Image (cartoon, rainbow, N blue to C red; front, side, top):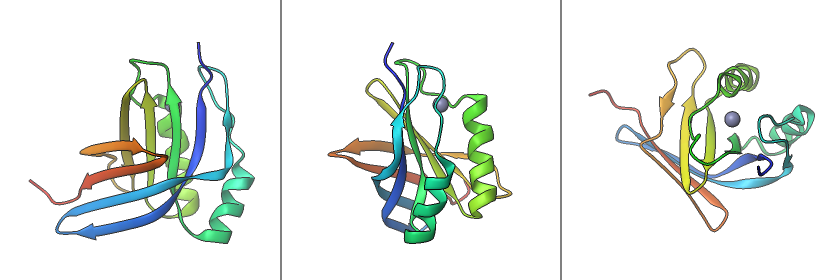
Length: 133
Ligand SMILES: [Zn+2]
């Protein structure tokens, strides 16, 4: 099995308009790395340093084995922790084989699954609907 790959995401654009949020993000140089197939160890100090320096940490990316695009319980717990800690919405972007999915975690709100998520030339794009109905 391939090792999980993970990286922080830094916003290039974060647009909210007419009930939609569109996030365009690049992979941060650090922290990023590899774990084993079932878990990754994250350098949380590097995340805080990156956020302090740029203020643009918009979420996290990691890979799952093919056919397992859903978030794990650990992913959810970890994302809730980061969202509470950084005090702002964060994306959880997961690539599983060719499939890319994303969720938006907002402090004190229900988690939203992105309507669309893709990765092209090292850039992540996630589209999240915020309007009701
Ligand atoms: Zn995961």
